[in-house]
Image 1 (spheres, rainbow, N blue to C red):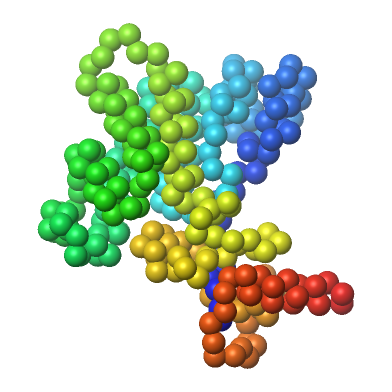
Image 2 (image 1 turned 180 degrees about the vertical axis):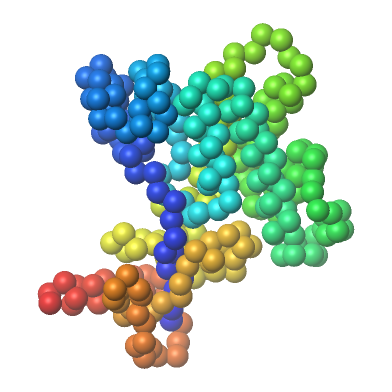
Length: 267
């Protein structure tokens, strides 16, 4: 009867708000952003025009569940905005390897019956990108698109750390940063995600996905399980209502929740 409602989010509404992003590309928009002072306040006034441009070149997830990667991605992005391209490049690549490790360590107990489990159940870390990507693809955590993004990041990581002459650090840093953003968006984004459905801005986990390993290990900790009658009082969710002891479909939950919200709106 109840569903998991996601209550904890990482939001980046400013950078990904389309009209503002397009406005920032114009001369008038750049001047307005520079005069507003928020980017100057956070990143300093020196070479401000270039910092504004680099700020809007980054494309992080607009709304996602908070993970340990969130703060680290912000730090790597800040390095790029400051013009510190090599730290941004290597930081984005290192973050990719960290994500591979955390995914395997947190998810492996769900795949004890798979052939690859015996290779992971005792280890504390993993350095072989290809093996990690293959394992997570076999577990159906990655589709081929995500796997290919990790392979791209692996190539950039090897070329940046093992000597390669004539690299365009800014270009490589931006591509690596937006690749890691795209990866985390695919895995942890809550808006327009296959795991979730939305009711007037409220985001819930679909019943069919509650036992999905990725959902269980990463999403549910950001949720509270509620029925369709729940209300908000003083910043808290209250759900002391009685419900029938039966299961309903997501579509039925949406219908019942919509009816409750309509009744509240009338008063």
